[in-house]
Length: 576
Image 1 (cartoon, rainbow, N blue to C red):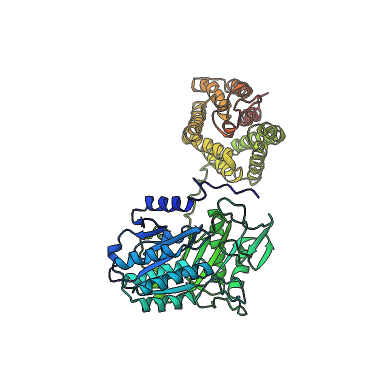
Image 2: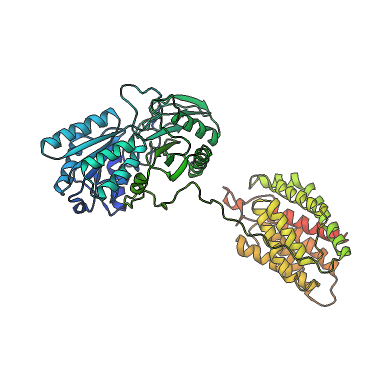
């Protein structure tokens, strides 16, 4: 099987490069010379306090080196990817913090055989040298209802133990006190993961295979087998299965959470899940727990303990108390710990009320005859756009996603619905403002925003004047707004080419005693000619400017649509 793609300098040096990258960007961290050990830069501050060391195989970043800093770990020891760190490096880390004056050392170890053995052997060697060392083994995995002899695996809950132990150490608590508190806290939490895809160790292929329509529940952070596979389902369904499994009274690995309990929730990205998906899972988890009467005191989401690029998520639930919350809220300088407010989640208002929209003022004296003209003109526009739907879609396939006609047809249907409501304002400015809102809400896409922008700007010159010069000014104002905010100019192969040609032809409206229909006819002809000329242009704006060849041999669909609208307006006013 071919090795997966990784952005590395070398497979053998990837861990060293990663640790250098972290310490290069985080001045509060230092590398221990000759070892894959990250230490606090201010080791002198731990004198007389308990030092906290953790670690394990790499590939779980930001764990564990990202949690080194005031208020969390004193140091972290990294092994090769998915491999326990060597005993010599663990001993060197213990010696470094002991010589800095630490009043004892606590090793926080995930429950994996290699980690227990190597950290345990280092502990024995350090004790032989007179260092006061203890070890706590974290086993928070809820996957197996009847754990085997090896016990539950240590996964993301370990990070919460880093946080609690770090606060205790900063308070000056003794090694036995810290050990006792974190052991109790660890017994009151559980974690469960679900994966949508495997991960792959640098230089190798995927650690396991998972069908495109499958997910796996309860797998380990190294790709170890989970407890079941299911077909893909919604976030709400997955989270329900996860929390039901984690809290199952029949499971020996359950976290004992019931209605009325207070908890801390961690929504952890296993590495390759998008932020969008992670936030959706967080919403599902918070809603489900609160529906069951669980009080969520704190919640965090992000990448806390990963499995390389595995697309998946884990949930960690820890039962909280006032003491645990105080420790959890203690400040830390660890670079990977999120800076979030220390505020209870449950009970907070999550929606700010939207201020009511200002209603459009009523026409002081509605002009029924003028409204009839509007209805006739807009009816022509709608019929024109609906008749062009397939043609515009076909033109759009060459440079876009082939939906220009569908988008304009959607606008036509929205206008027809609006007309059937029978509430058109007779004042021109108010008409354009109302029409702009219809298109913004119903048309959608970039076209909807551009038309709405055009109409909103065009309405302004018509507020106090509806003479022919005011309509010419309205056209100019609409075009100016589209240029200013849309970024296109005439010649960029967009709808602006048609609109600008028409706008130029409408300038005689500013003169005295002008022939309005003749000028409108000229504007319609100019817009049609400009739309046809776009077939010879190179796209300078819009989606067409991003395709491989920006020189297209067919007219721009937006320009064709704009020209058709202008023609329909002219015909609705009686032009032939």
